Image: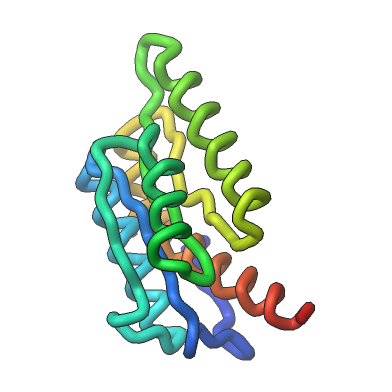
Length: 156
C-alpha cells in the first residue's frame, strides 16, 4: 500500500479544507474522495470544516478550486479527478490544462492546492490507485494538504 503514512506529528485540527472532485470516472473519483475524507478525519478534521463540491470533469477542477478559495477561505484545497488515456490527444490537453491551472492557483492564492488527479493508461490502473492494490491517492492528497498547511503555519 503506497498510501500508508506516519501520522506522528500530523494534525488537521483547526484546519479548514475544500475538496473539488470530478464526476467523470465517478467510480474512481468517489474512491479518491472517500480516501481523502477518511484521512482528514483520522487526522482530526471534523466534517464541518470540510467543504466538498462536485464538478462535471477534471478540466473544471481549477475553477471550482478557485471558487472554494474565494468563497470558503480554506487552509488548503484538494483537487481530485481521473483522466484515462484514450485514443486521441484529448487526454494530453485535459491533463496539461488541469495541472497548469492548479499550479497557478497555488501561487495566486498562497495556499496549497493539491493535485490529486490520476492520469492512468487504463481504468484498472485507476482503480488500483483509488483504494486498490496500490493504495488510495486521495489519502495521499489529504496528507499532503495537512503537511503543507502545517509547513505554512510553521513559517509564520
